[in-house]
Length: 418
Length: 169
Picture 1 (cartoon, chains in turn green, red):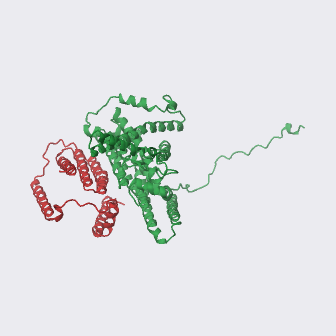
Picture 2 (cartoon, rainbow over the protein chains, first blue to last red; picture 1 turned 180 degrees about the vertical axis):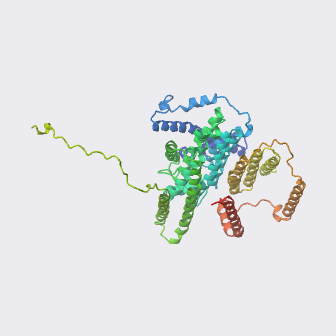
Picture 3 (cartoon, one colour; picture 1 turned 60 degrees about the horizontal axis):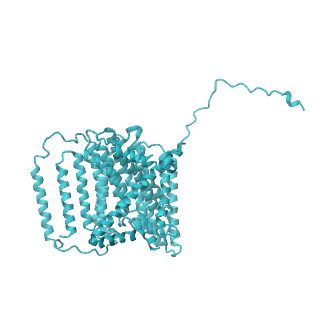
């Protein structure tokens, strides 16, 4: 039973003891165990991508009225493996004027940026890479590294389309970082902690933060979509305008690495959304069996990921001015208002002198009410600004030819017959 | 010499080497990339000083925003290859060298007279609550510098809006 409660800790201890038994210094053995743990974490992230790719292609197929991959493995589940083998055997092409080191560094950075988030994701109350006390800021910082990979790819390829893609990527990623940070501040204020695991802990004691602040959750969802650069925010790779944007000159495994990076990032933000706003590993009976938390987190992450995929399939691409206007004139003011209102309510709550039994209910109710009011005000403003107006009536239609009157109905002889 | 000192020397060497490459490399984008390496090195120094918050903020602001904007601005300019082969030095480079030498001597002199220069690193009193302590001290002890920095940033924002305002409207 104790093994089921804390499998990772027990395996780690066993490995460390084994290596100290072989005569290694304890500190050294600890470092080796941690390295193995990091490797296993990264590999499980990459292995997950194999299946998220199949999931996405299947859904794409179903929505476009075809089967999707259905030849290899049961229900086509293993389709990605022959794709991988194919991409391993492809030729690497380096363009003549490419800047070698940044050109080869870019795919690594774009996958690494997504994988580094996994270091702070808590899969269960005792299964996580590390629990640093600035976890939320770390997530933002790591997102910048992924953006750096895209910029390097675009510039080092020595291709005008790639450069245009990189310039679009910079304007998009840097500007959508602002509402994302604002939305991330809301769980930090609510949990009074910056560590990701502490935020999940706080949610398991009260309710999911999606209920407390749906506005912040939606802002985070939209802006993280833009950070990843998936449809409707896929201007940086826009196939029909700039062929493939930053990845146009890449081939073989380097191209595949970008592909993996995009899918991994998309799943990572779904997991982050589930962790920060949908309670992460918390769920029923999770106190007694911590391992259940992994199951809950995966279910929640895949539920969010489903919406991410559906959005990607259903929505058309935005224009760049629409994208920037939407960010700076809509998401940023909305995020600022939400953060301010959340902070004001959190500060005002202790002043009300409510008894301890009713205080949590009042807190949730006040946050929810203020968020609903924000949504209502936004809806009213949007309707005033963007409502589709009927064109003004300047005159009635004056038809030249008047249709002839309908012919009188003919008495049918059949009706008189008995 | 402990492990911390070795790590510090490595990080400092990386920062200095990258900084020298920033000013000597002829390709502007390469210079910006070396600047990113130097800023990462500074983040490592912050980690060694037990200031994880500052290390992360360093990465968020300097690498995530400022260095990327540098690269963005450089990509919009022409002649980033730097193949013209002319001298990279301004004719009055010795003034800058003299000034920076004076600045370094001054900093070393001030630090050597400071009593904390020779003492051991004291243990942190409240290691778990570092960020909240930082936040509290920002709005109590260091309120005036904090507000002054905010005013400066607001002034910069207004200036940026004024510069980019379309005058024809």
